[in-house]
Length: 188
Image (spheres, rainbow, N blue to C red):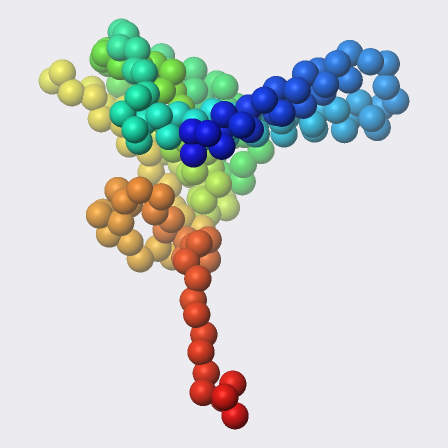
């Protein structure tokens, strides 16, 4: 995975550079719209490649974690602000309730930001339309608890152990497992 991620970075960097050059050209409106889409999609692809690269490093125990003082409240507000466009375009409403007490912890702020962003993106993607996503931060006796609650857009039959499994998907339709179908009728 590390090698593939690294091999993808080189052509992707070139692609992003050429899209950047195109964005500086005086193009017809339709072409400019296409360039904006290319910028957005290539940025998303770059983020995915970086995530896969980091996942490979984390699996091998080589992921660098920078411990720093992080204010959880501020990091959550920043994450939600950065996702404002996604939240506004989602068919759900995000309701926040943060403790007035400031939650400070020692963590890698960038990686924790990505965790929050991933959880919120999943909640936006898989919530039932017209419902609410509750993001609650409670701070009590030197303990911070972050709750992200939503109603799924489909019925889920999962256990707590399932959710904590690596690469688990609650939506059976998105499973990568293959079913082999055999029939004696094929022999006739």
